[in-house]
Length: 406
Image (cartoon, rainbow, N blue to C red; front, side, top):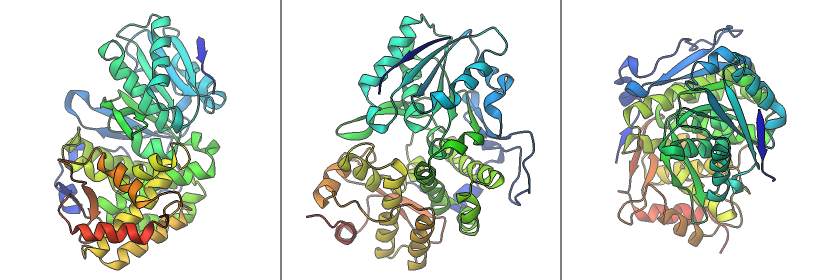
């Protein structure tokens, strides 16, 4: 093993979901009634994309299961991409699992850690390593880390020699429940988050919940913003389960973690199976992201974690939905309360101005013909709408209510 290191208007709700064919998403474990202990076999959620379908394995100890990972690596070479934080913790175990059968050459590149390094310049280092190692089209890029590593590795895999194999091994809540599933890859641009990228699906996703033992509290909470999102846009029962299990989830109880990750993956996989390239329904997965991405870009990448910015964005979207008369005020209050219990921010950072919001929202990927479109809540809990057809004064009212800077 040689290591290279760098220094530092679609609408979906419960009714739509219930009409999805049962074969679209399958899970080997039904945890509607949570068991007291985990079974040894991992839960498996399948993302149904025809010939490009792939499994999401969720469980404990999966990082050391060489047979599980190796069966999704078809060639004789692999490149593990990780960062300086994750490498000391989990790199050796991942490489050992890949090399366990003795028939795979494994190369490694270690990137600096942080959203500010999610750039084209750093992306080129992955290509440099692949070319230096003479990796061919049958190689597999393995993303070991959080959302930044997963997005960059996926984009590199989509681009290197016009496409090589790709495996996701997420190590954060955010990447486990959201970014590792669905094939969105890319890098940031100073003018906007994730503006350069491609849709490129992995061969599998391996979620070892044991890696969350070393995740800092702030990053753990950040990932829960996406978990809240699934309940709000399409899964009322999941939202209510979260309200009843906040303490267990925050205490990182294994069974509770598996249930939360599995339900999140099922929800996302169902939507991806319907709309892989975000032509309509998949956009609903971006609840809070239009406001949130503006915050991330406005304050500087890495100053706020993605989930922290999305948390505030969700609150703003819920507030705007309530002011439009599309949801009951109780949904807004419950949303804010749950995010606060997850120790997430619900107020806009002091540096953000209305003009910054408007500037960055204008170049949001969901904008069309110069019109900003939002995912907003509508109807009962679990329903939402993706639209640009709303009373614009309510957007102004939302910004006036939450933005304190001049």
